[in-house]
Amino acid sequence: MRLADTRPPFAGLANLTDEALASLPTPCYLLDEAQLRRNGEILLGVQQRTGCRILLAQKAFSNFDLYPVLAPYLAGTEASGLYESRLGREELPEKENHVFCAAYRTDEFQELLQYADHIVFNSPSQLAKFGPAAKAAGKSIGLRINPECSTQEGHEIYDPCAPGSRLGTTRAQWDAAVAAHPELLILKAFPKSYGMAGIRLGYCLCADNALLRRMAAASPPWNVSSPAQSAGVAALAERDFLQRTLSLVHTERRWLTDNLTALGFWVCPSQANYLLFRGPRGLREGLLRQGIAIRGCENYSGLDDGWYRIAVRPHEENEALITDIRQFCKEKSLWQ
Image 1 (tube, rainbow, N blue to C red):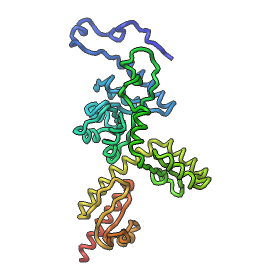
Image 2 (image 1 turned 60 degrees about the vertical axis):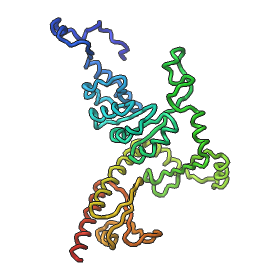
Image 3 (image 1 turned 120 degrees about the vertical axis):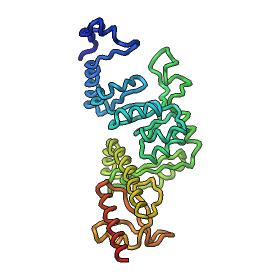
Image 4 (image 1 turned 90 degrees about the horizontal axis):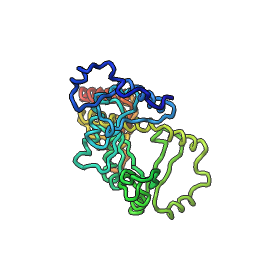
């Protein structure tokens, strides 16, 4: 492997005349495109061998004229705020867009959601303040952790893990945030997120250790089967699947809502992978004759036979559903 560039200084300028050099505006950057591509190939090789993703850190390199040169080798861009995120989306629209900021601004966050795919927060308070909006928009989120373990000596001012650093959440900050909400109980299940029908697998997070011990004591001795454990491990390795699913649900839910509303139906706001709406009576039976099953909600408390629930499906299936609903409404109007 080539570890160092042994060429003499300015070797890449060998074909430039003195007149050409003199005509360059100053100050300016001189970049070696061939060397950039060689470095890009190294980065691409690392990703292919390890399965990791390497992002373009725009704070270190924001020469967007060269983004197309680096695009074949990188998974996306990393930004430290709104404007870098917008730059990454404008110049590399098909690539991932990651953002980390020490403190997000309320007046900028909604615009940021238009560009970012993955948002990392710096503290539990920022996560609590902006996390729900990010999740509702279908974004993946993270929390920067400060491991409080420095691997360098000196230059403490540049050390993100130095005592007193404000970059990342320390163990004490995390414990304080969790202790402030002892009533918080988070239950997560794998089957619906990963399409694992028939598999019973989930987990619980809670700061109340006494409650967790009581829950464990009330659980069966072997409450998770071996197939469920294997399926869970495999599901956790499928990071792309969950992000693609969240993005699909967000986009298609909006599309379904807009089309149902255009038909005159009243659609309840939703952040889930299904929609509850009010439409014409007889819709469920009419669609069933076309081979499409939707959930009638007349047995829900307070609802009648004009209420229905549908799942957010892939776009082709959603289009077929809306087409048949339009046809039902047209026929019902003609019959009446």
